[in-house]
Image 1 (tube, rainbow, N blue to C red):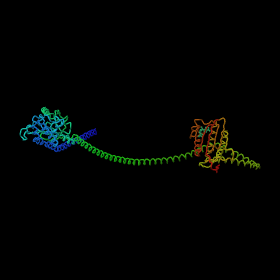
Image 2: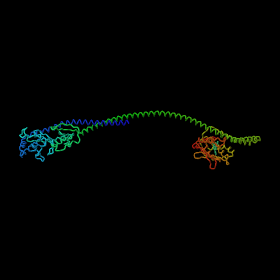
Image 3: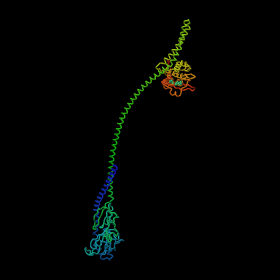
Image 4: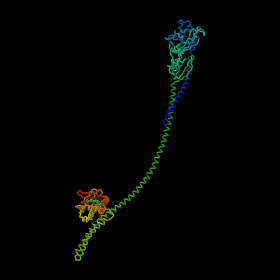
Length: 598
Ligand code: ADP
């Protein structure tokens, strides 16, 4: 709203200044031109005046010419008239005037310088002209008008011709010189201002504006119109006022007939001056506006630069603080992570030891389960040893040392067998793991051997196929033989459990090389793994067995042992019924020196 008002005010101000400039320019030009016009009139008017006055004496002098006086005395004498015409013509040519002619007292022209021209004055009567009357009464007659016969305008100067050639005597005729003022008009043409010469009625008869001729500045009165008609001053032309008043003018009186020489300053020049001033004002205002605008722009640019610099500084400050903040956050996060990592490490450590303990617990649990079988296994040779010993004593008492020695041999065998069983159990109970190259046939045989008595007790057939040829290349894997045995014993025990209720009770353990792996398969003729069990098979504490019999840890521990050796433990059901567990361990191909822990 304020901006709009401001704009309107600026526009009005600008318009006002331009208008004022135009007005000032116009007034000044008008005044200047008026002054110039006045000065020009000072030069033009005397020129005109002197030209008119110069010829005033000519007819006066002619009045005393004998030729003229004689012609008036002998108006009918042709030679005299001819001489008159001749001399008038000669004088006219010498004096360079428009025409010279002489009338008698009635106004009839007796002789004229243009006697030999078609529109010559001879024979014409000009008694109606005022100059004729003036001269007839002994005064100089001055008149300006359009010639009735030639239609040419001119200044007429008339003087009396006295009868005896003595001034003041009776007047016999009138002699007139007609002067053309057209030359002046021609001179004025070069002026850019309108110049006009008007008679005492205000009728313009000479001007450098041709359309102004015989026009009045003001409407003429009726008396004036009548007078003009009588004197035929302008040959009966109706004098109309100028269609539009030409405006201010400078004027100066000329001659003795109340004439006014007028100069109208060029309106075009005035308008041009006004326009120039207005244009100058516009230019000046434009310059002012442009400089104001440039200044304004510059100030704005500086301000903008300052603002952007401030914004930049602010941004930099913010960035700095953000960086500090983020650094702090990162430090804290890092610290957090370190803490978490340490806790994770501790947890891992704990897990590892827990796992070890779990493995050990699994082993011990298995040992417990095996205890009955082992007891039975050890009992047999023990009983045999006792019987052999008793018999040996009897043989010795009977004096049969050879028999006694044979029995001692049997005792040795039986105790060796017991030693083997015990050493297996000792090795199995060992807590630390020892990674080495293991010939897979050995744990397979060892586990089968350890479970043999139990299978037998339950009346389950156990078939082994641990690589038939004894001299075949051993399948070596990197691992702990005790742990591998632990896995296999666990699988054999599960198989034994699985076939417990089955009509056909059979378990088979095989070893074979498949690609880069040693593969042990334990198959049974049990009921197989039910679908809902398969999903949880390797989960710890998952068991389908009655409490006291199963802990649900066997497969979980076995799986983790196998994974620790980069192997896999999987299970699937056989098409003919029963389950098959597959243990796959990567072969240690490059290594050749296998250690033999058993
Ligand atoms: P546990 O023997 O103490 O139950 P395991 O982890 O060794 O624990 O076995 C988990 C479960 O897997 C067993 O309860 C049984 O249901 C199933 N399972 C294991 N082996 C076999 C098999 N050979 N045939 C059928 N089911 C089996």
